[in-house]
Each structure stands twice: as C-alpha cells, then as structure tokens.
Length: 268
Image 1 (cartoon, one colour):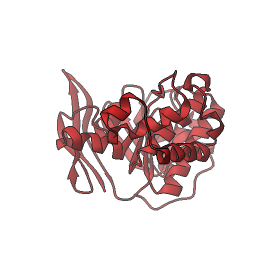
Image 2 (tube, one colour):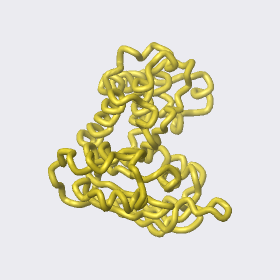
Image 3 (cartoon, helix red, strand yellow):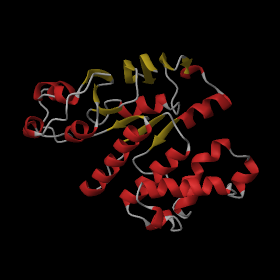
Image 4 (cartoon, one colour):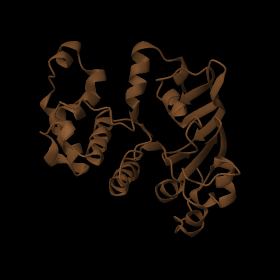
C-alpha cells in the first residue's frame, strides 16, 4: 500500500527528516509523535508532495509518488488530502463553499473563478457536514465558527476529495480539550467507517494512545519508535522526547502508566 524508504529532506545544512522508512500495508490510524522540530510536519508535507524529498522514495500501490509532476502530482494531492493546524479555510466564504473547494482540482478554471458547483456536489458537501455534526452551519461564514467547528469544516473539505489517505498536521494543537476530543473522534470514525488511512501528527502521548492503532515516534528527524500504543512505555517516551524530558509536550510518565490501554490489535 504505502511505502516510505530512506526518505530524507535537507534545508541547507539542516536535516529535517533523516532516512525515514515506514510501511503501511492496510488502512489504519497512525499517530506521529515527537518534540517540535522532530520532523513530523516535514514528513507529512513530503507525503502530500508539498515538499520535494532530497533523497529516498514514496510509493503507493506501486506508484512512485516522488516522481509525479503536473496533473499527476495534483491528482495525488487529492488522493492524499491534507488537514492543517490553522484550518486554511477562506474566512469570508460560507462553510459549504469552503467544503466544495475540495473539488477544485477536478473543476474547470471558469467554474472555479465564478464559484460554480454542480448540485450533486453541493448535496454531497452538506451530507458530509451533517455526518460531522455541523450541517446547520453550512450557510454561515467560516470565520463565524469556533475553532473546533472550523477544523471539522476542514475535515469535510478533505472528504470532498474522496481521498485514500488523510494527513492531519497537528489537527488539535490550537483547540481546547473538548473540541480536540470531537475532532479526534471524527478522524477515528472516518478511518473505521470509510476504511481510509489517517496519519496525524500529535503532541500528546495520551491522544496517540487513545485514538491510534499505531504510533510512530520521531526525534531529530529520525524514526526512533514504530509500534502499538500499548508499547509506549515511559522508557520509550524518554527515547522519543529525550532522556531529560519533563514531558511538557507530551503526557507525564504517570499518565503513560495509568491510561487505560486500548485493546491489543494486530500490528500493521
């Protein structure tokens, strides 16, 4: 399915991602954890082809993603949808129009300029909003919504692309705990109900343990852990965050030890 092999990204002398290798053989929900600057966002941006890899390869169903150009690259970015921390909505547009922007990659320039969309797409957008519990906000401007609601609009926009993979770059970093829970539950349901792979960059260990089937830990650009949530022991956490870490960017060691574990699942 998805193969990442020796993927590296350099910015001048700085190595943001260092020879990352990862295989995903079936749809699952993966949490990527690590300190700020560990390379998590750069890894996702390379998967989506917002950043070109310096070395290494990404293949999906046998297709070399890193070699895609032009229309093929844009088609891949539709298959591998991206959700951002700051939502990236158009504030003054209504909610349903923001969701419909998920179809722009397959619309003509003229229809895009005049914001013209088929009625079938409009109905689909409203159905997706209803699924996410925010259909009543469809006619409102995006800027009128709360942060949690805006992030669900961004998720709806991604679903309009009908992607095979959803990448979520710190999707709850700017949300309060209640809205963070709603957003993570939405991403989890999308994985379970649609069979889509969801890969999310996360700050906290407890969030990764509660919602993900698999957790990848990054440190200084390298993948230093890849396993089940139940394997995230205090020792493993210290390897990811550093021996002297106080877990200010993660769960405390007490939280790691006392969180009710998810049922053990087959490794992916």
